[in-house]
Image (cartoon, rainbow, N blue to C red; front, side, top):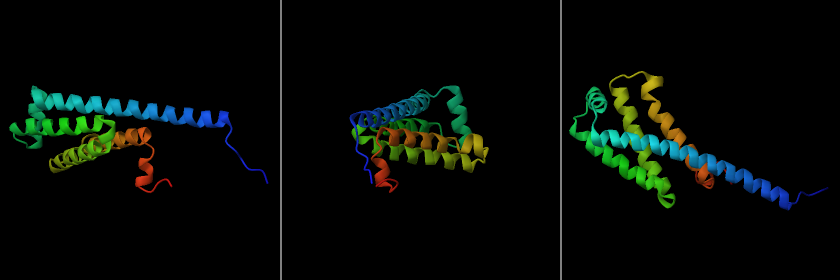
Length: 142
């Protein structure tokens, strides 16, 4: 019975594959971060489209600033590698509020209401690709 041993080339291939997936995770995280940063800017500067959207969702205009600051804090925490998981949890909560707000006004399910879910899933995929050890935490890897 032959046993497989890791050869230097196999080890390099595994490391290269892992680094490729980590790069993909970083790219996904940067794209999601840029999208959320755009949302922060909108909440803090309050252009007409944000004012109309906030009114449509039933929020007072004054609350957009608070929402923007909360998202900004979560985004900064997410951008720091050591605290990225904590930031992702905060952003997940923020996105859950977006889903709830859209459900309340009966927005179209797939295009508007679940959009925050899509963003959240992509955010977590990017984070797990950057830090594969997170799969152990949820029991998906030994």
